[in-house]
Amino acid sequence: MVKVLGISGSPRKGNSQFLLEQALEAARAVSPGKVECTPYTLRGKKFAPCVSCFRCGEQGGECVLKDDFQELRDLWVAADVVIYSVPVYHMGVPGQLKCFLDRLGNSLFGRYRHLFPAGVDSLPKLLKVVGAIAQGVHLCSGQEHTITDLVCHALILQCIPVTGDMWQSYIGAGGWTSNDIARDALARQAEAGEADAAVLVKAARDVGRRATEIALVLREGGRVLRDTLRADPAYLPFLERLGCADPTTAGGGSGAEPGAGQGTD
Ligand SMILES: Cc1cc2nc3c(=O)[nH]c(=O)nc-3n(C[C@H](O)[C@H](O)[C@H](O)COP(=O)(O)O)c2cc1C
Image (cartoon, rainbow, N blue to C red; front, side, top):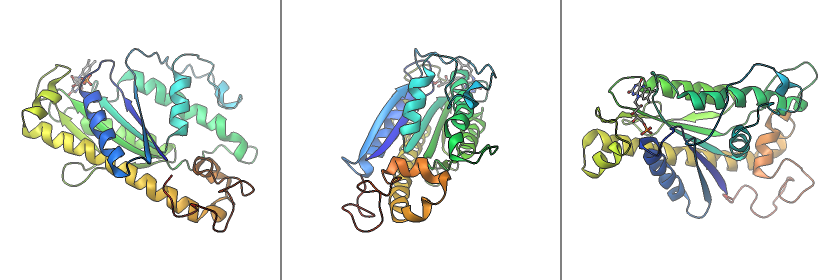
């Protein structure tokens, strides 16, 4: 089963949520019954900013701040695909999401430190597929900066950012609400067949679909190459997600056990 986590980065149920639903619907359609989508919204959640104590580096990645971070981190760690759908705030990522990303990044160093030799600060090759959707009220008002921030987040965490399809999506899905601040602006405009909203919906769906397709490819490739990858501890969290980190358990060894290198679950 491919696990797709969709994160709406808005504090309201609005345009980000609408585009996320489009992306997740397209993700599910890639392989019906074999894609599990978990929608998550930052609405009503609390993510305090990192306090730079660096304790997460010493205590297995546990953050000293207790709020909604832990729940979303666990969903993030378990996911094969993460789709972010965010409003542009001040030409960038909304603060609440930035708080989550800052804490996630640092805490993962602590979480996976045991995989590497003493003194080596590194991150495993998590190989999650990351797609980004960003929309703002104005045209050309921070969408690409925002998507770039999310692409950089994917890169630093050893994940794989994907675009949608040409020509609607060069680095992700970016668009605008045509100067309308209403939470249902894009849904209304798409329903009315307005061109910019239609392009944005297509781009969001493409991002969801492509991210899921690439995750399927990675799962199959990981299974085929598992014996080789197992020799490098940086791949262990990825192999654990595939259920083949341990050569002694079912599905973990080399050879032709059921589903190995063939199934998509
Ligand atoms: C604090 C704040 C900052 C914003 N900054 C921008 C901006 O820099 N560029 C832009 O196009 N829209 C900006 N907006 C507008 C939102 O991105 C826009 O209304 C978006 O559609 C909201 O998405 P939502 O419905 O998912 O909340 C801002 C809105 C807020 C509340």
